[in-house]
Image (cartoon, rainbow over all chains, first blue to last red; front, side, top):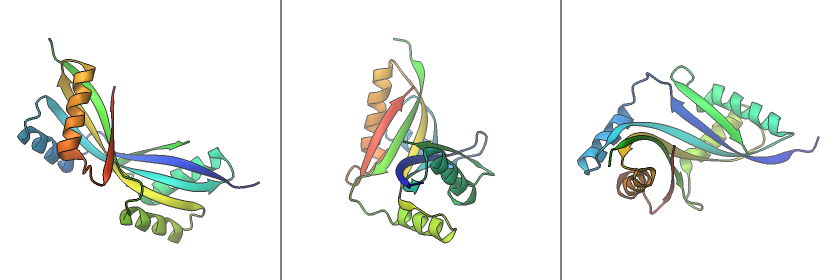
Amino acid sequence: MAAKSFSARVTVTLKRGVLDPQGKATQSALGSLGFEGVGSVRQGKIFDVELTASSKKGAKEALESMCEKLLANTVIEDYDVVVE
Amino acid sequence: MAAKSFSARVTVTLKRGVLDPQGKATQSALGSLGFEGVGSVRQGKIFDVELTASSKKGAKEALESMCEKLLANTVIEDYDVVVE
């Protein structure tokens, strides 16, 4: 099967309940800058990946495998893969 | 006007053309792990923000102001605000 190109966005976020000191620091900094009403900030990361695969399903499976092995720490992080 | 609670996701990505050594390192690591067909990886960050504002429009404007002042470096980064 001919390989096709796909663009995907992988979103990695901390699981609910995991402390996020980086987010807390951002929240505190927003308060110092005068922004009111910010109840919480939680920080995460994204990976915009261009890849070739035989199908959209194959691309998604490859990306999920990448998350399990490298992109996310599944003990404390959740991931979400969207292939365009 | 009564303040309402909003959940928002702010996505910050490097502008096109800005070098992304972190993404390059991730791409290289994926190659080392045996993942084939990865053409490029670009890394970004997200902020999941809970905030109160008088309206959805007000929440979006506040978040855009936060991006301009703190969350994004607008010289090299783009941001996108989605209020739920």
